[in-house]
Amino acid sequence: MLRVPRRIASRTIATYPHLSLLEHDVRYDDAPIGFSVQTLSVRDWCVAAAITREGQWILVEQHRHGIDSLTLETAGGIIDEGEAPQDAARRELFEETGFEAASVTPLGWVHPDPALLSNRAFLYLFRDAERAAEPQQSHDERTRVVLLSRSDLIEHLEDARVSHTLAVIALMRALARC
Image (cartoon, rainbow, N blue to C red; front, side):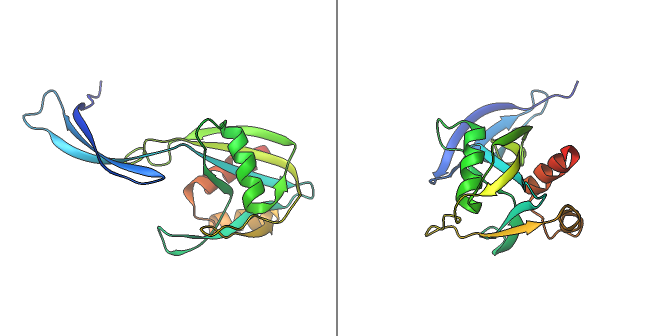
């Protein structure tokens, strides 16, 4: 059986609105010395893969600060405290795209990056989505809705025009069901 290191101590290095940087002192029981690792504590996320009644996949184009570039991805975001993951996915879909859907299928959850992050991302497929409003633009997030056919979506996934890992996973799981 693989041995896991034991956490000896943990401390918060810095706290920000959406994440905390933690440092952990750890040691394998059979090792002469320990070591330190850093992790990020973040709230859980939701991802909303969505398809219209006409079979168009709903994506959003937006700027991502980590890569300082535009991305094409699914709607999604942070789950508010006390909010159910499915409700958060429905909210994010509406806020970022203006679309609503009556039919939702859970697609499971994943650990986005278990080496560094403590959270989970909950994935959903929204079917028969219809535009109900314009996307809600805010001072810190702007989105543009992009509709793609199934074949165009697959092409975008294959050539990395859709490269956000969580969007790729959600869309691959959704495509397997549609």
